[in-house]
Image (cartoon, rainbow, N blue to C red):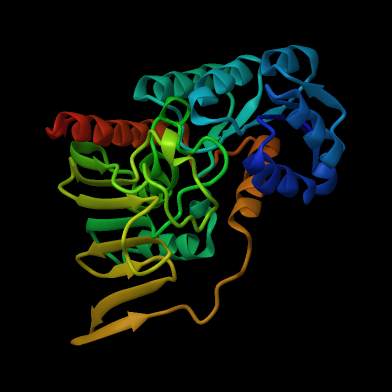
Length: 347
């Protein structure tokens, strides 16, 4: 064990700066960010200067060979999650990899196996798990307040929220659009609250109706001429325990609200909407709604980074585990496969 966690950053873009580096810095003497790697040298140098990082590289392989690190944040486009994570684990580092785990189920499986072999932590950037709403509802669920959760709905829908920056609309680098980018957040949240049941049957549809034409961009102007991902994905997952989950995700859809991120759960003893948290039950022959009078306010990313550091320094396990990443990746890939073939995928 070490008293100060020596951290390296792979990928020096927006998510590294806004979600990882800012929050590592808040932990003061417990963390030292000592190296950053990005294939774009200018980006790496700018990041190093901004955050006072002493070692700068254009190759994460070189960074891992040249600097002694305890942990790494992987903040690259999705295509590079698996190779960067595998290299970091092989170098003896704990890894916090941004979502989604990888591009394929096989990659996610290799990542989980490598972490187990190395005896290192591998966790993923599903920061909604660290929200006070999810933490509170999990206590209710663990106490049996919802009973058997047999149905769930997930929404990650934007009216015109196609990112006008980065590589979010590049299928080769990302593997897909809203499903693999924002949909996975609500999917993971639902699965976590449901106890991560094993999927049995997956049916999915994807659409590309808005992203390939010029339009109003609430998150900046996107490159509609090179838009290669879906702008909407819909799906249904049937689990081996009999539960069912419905998923809707979209970067752009003709709906009323500009941005909806929501998970709804239905159990035989109660149900809940998560954001904001509201619980629905029947007690003493009365239908009741429960809303928290107070929930602590803390940035989800800040809590995620704080917990990752705690786990690395103490040797405890994170709440987002590598084997759960395999299950989630399996579902995402099955949804895309089903959409492509027009057939349900049996797992």
